[in-house]
Every structure is written in C-alpha cells, then in structure tokens.
Amino acid sequence: MTPSLLPLFRYVGGKRWLVPALRTGIRAVLSRTPDSAFVEPFAGGAAMAAAVAWQRTTLCDRASGLTDLYCAVRDDPDGVISASAKVCDDFPVTEAGYYAARDAWNTRSPSPVRQAALLLYLMARGFNGLYRVNAVGSWNVPCGRRADHSLIAASLVDPDLLREWSRVTTEWTIVCADFARPISDARRGDVIFADPPYAKMSASSFVGYSGVFGPGDQIRLAVALSDARDRGAVIVHTNADDPDGVVRDLYRGRGFHVVPTAELRCVSRDGEGRGRSRCLLVVSDLRIVSAKRVAA
Image (cartoon, rainbow, N blue to C red; front, side, top):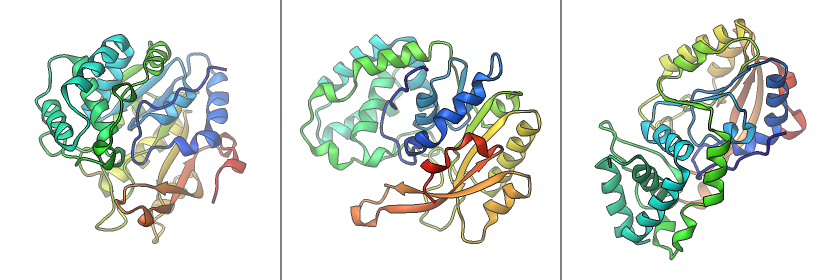
C-alpha cells in the first residue's frame, strides 16, 4: 500500500482526524475498479487526499492560492524549497515580517514557486491555520501567536515532504473550479470525499474560506452527490449536525447513511473556548467506514 502523505500545512477544519476511519475503506473501494479516481472537490488542506495517496486523484478548490500551491509543489518542489529559504531571509519571523509577507502575497508574484513559498509562510505564521481572502482575493488573516516566536528558517518547509508530495501527485489533476465540475465527472468505482464549508449554525460560525457557502450551495451539493452516487460513485461527505436536523434530512431523504460524530474545532483565539463540535459523516456505503474509529 502506498504510504500516507502528511498535509503540507496546518489547516482549520482539516480532516486528518478522520483518516483512520476512512483511508482503508476508501482505498479498498478504489482498488476494485480499473482506472478509478479519488475526487476531493473541496481541497482545503487536502489531508484526506494526502492520506489516500491514490495515483489517479482530482483535487479541486475555488481558492486559487491553494490550487496554485499544490501545482507548484507537484511540478517544482525544489523550486518551492529554494523560494521558501529566500522568503525566510526576506521576512523575519516577527509580526512586522508577517504583514510584509502578506502584502507580498497579495501583490501576486509572477513566480509560481515564490507565491507558493509566501503562502506556506503565511499558513505557518498566521492565525490558527486559517485560509481566508477578501472579495478581491487578498489575504486578510491576522498574525498568529507563532508569528511572534523565534523559529528557524528550516521550520517553514520539510524538503523531504515536498519532494514526496511531488512524487505521489505527479499524475494528479489539480483545478481551481466550482465543486460541481469534478463531481459531475465522477463515474462508477470512483470515490468522492466532499468536505465543504459547513452549513451555517449561527452568526459566529465559520462557514467559508473563499466566499459564503450558503443554503443554496448546500442543496446544490446534495443534488450533485446524489447524481454521482446514482452513476456508481461512492460518496463520503462531512457537514455540520445542525440542531434542527436540516442537514440530516437533506441526505437521508436522498438515501444516504448519516453517522453522527464530533470533531475538534480550533478557531477560537481562547484555548478554553475550543472543544468538540457535533458533525455528520454522510456516506453512500457504510462499509467504507471503520466504525471503531468514528467517535459519536
């Protein structure tokens, strides 16, 4: 079995915690069909895609900064490594250095490896692994506590990890697009892992990293996943467990299995305000889930 990759960076809402419950089942399904594909239409930190490490993978996100980063690492890992060393030289590990790097990323360097290195710097030093841009695509995440600490330049990237990412992802399709595009391409034997911005539960809920993902988008996603399942794809989807049961009804009404679980949410600036939040694992086939590893 291909070894798991680690994610390239810490990412708020990442699904690394779900890997033990899903990786074996996902790879078992993919192994049954020649030329099967693993599809992740909301790439984010790509923890599940990295863990599954399937040769034929489609990674998609509306956030062009993320997809550009994954393409740069896939196509030129040594260039990203060299550019990261230069970024660490150019921007000291201080609050002022962070905001200078943020301004540099927002000016959009013509060099893909330079832009990728800047994003790795921002993800490492910004607030709690949050990826967020404003309406014009400019990075607006504030400086995090780690940005004030003295960190050696080598801590920004792991050269071995970037080179392994490049080796594993060499045939991956990486696109910046709406989620409907890769889902509509999924066929029998493929596995779709859909981890969208969660359904909004309150005014303070974090629901998106590149624009609002509203109720209409949630319904559109449910329809797209239902259609892909009817074509023979296996669906794994995560979402919030809202008190009114709207999300449960949305998927149970379409014949999906809904498994309640909980995940650690780490966005709060106050560590005491962090804790486990109810969420849902929605699947078209329960056999893909290792029940012993899903904590309800």
